[in-house]
Length: 117
Image (cartoon, rainbow, N blue to C red; front, top):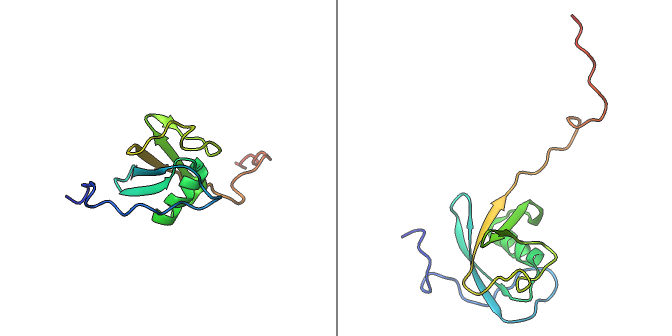
């Protein structure tokens, strides 16, 4: 029953993600990562996807730039509101996380020298 989520185990409504103030009706969504972690996310229907990503960041620590949110097979675009994306109360979001891109000397536009034999 660890992965069971219903009205009894869901958190109370009222928490809103970061970013600019959201408008509209409350929107309760269940989020599941590819690793199987599940949690409830309470935001406003007028919140942007970016604000939802900040709320996810507060819950699981994954930075918004490393998140992709998917609802009903569609990747949600950061600049759109949840309403514009067609997200409705009770919808299920899939959280896909990516690894941070490597920085440093491994990326170069200069060709590597030929090996000496």
